[in-house]
Length: 501
Image (cartoon, rainbow, N blue to C red; front, top):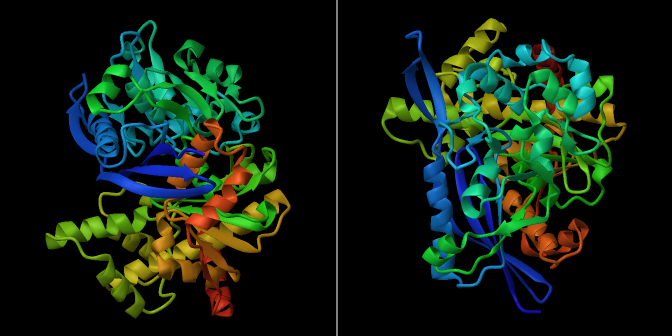
């Protein structure tokens, strides 16, 4: 067949990448052509009462410009013809757009403190058990249910006649092709979609006072939603490529790319700023056990991601940021790894998901406070802080696996780690040792791989995600970490379990 070229725009909460996927005569290859860093920016703004608060926003104009730069790089370095484009993002945030196409204000970042108390506001309007029965989603501050309730309560003047709320991937699809739809994988994590019929829940919208007309249409992953604006394509120097609604929640795309042989036996960890820990199951599990363990049912591609959203690389990213401010320069990961390897084992543990670590001004201070409050020694140096994080993450993976297996009635026999965390050799080995089972790592850029495979289905290149598996295995090496000291982790694990409850 003639080669087909697809473009994946993969955006996380700290950066974005653009990849070209080439499908040619039964083979698949992927090439990165553009990357950029981005982060939320904090403003200190007075409201109408004069009270000053911190507000954290995304720079959507900067992100859009970099997506266009990625398309320009494609036109310059690859070809003038492109078959399709797909965008995936983190699973929160968005904003209103007027019927005339104007974004109504700045786009808030999901870590903004306006959401600190919104879970209780939502629960006051709809019973928590009922909300979980409908959506299968557990309670997180950044859920869109919280964000839209806050918007309606605090910024009603922005809800203009004819306005539509655009989830964050839809914002950029809208900029590129003018369409206002979102795929079910992203809609599923909002705590507003009925997990069974994949539609916005009228009951929940009504209880929260959200006008149904405000919400975009929901489509299945792999739907062609339009094509690149003609004027934009002309200015870039490429054709009007088709726009595909992929599994735009980045975790859905990452899970789809995991080289899993038996879903019931494989625990999948999408490792990055967050650690998304779960299994692929055929139907939502909304039992009391699942709710009590705070396990979510997120939409996949012909399946459900039964998972917990846990803190991940954010902890070490924030430690490194604080040390950069102290030193005036960035410590290399190589140097941090050396210090971590030299640090003693099991000196202390933290609960990675303690609320104090969600968005502290100083992560090192927050970790020291946690150790003091729990009667543990405060780490004396940077290497020990890092080791405490990695050991605690591995312990958390083990604990969450126990909860997921109990709620799903399955047993894990292998761990598949995908995403940027594939490169963390120390954490991968700690995970194998803590869990007492082999850990398979790769692909590193699993989200982009999953994005491209969904586009390939939309374009008729492959017929299913099952057909994608041999292509993924052929294109990306999978590394294995076997447990080497599993028994040494059992005693410390019981100590960890006692700390986190």
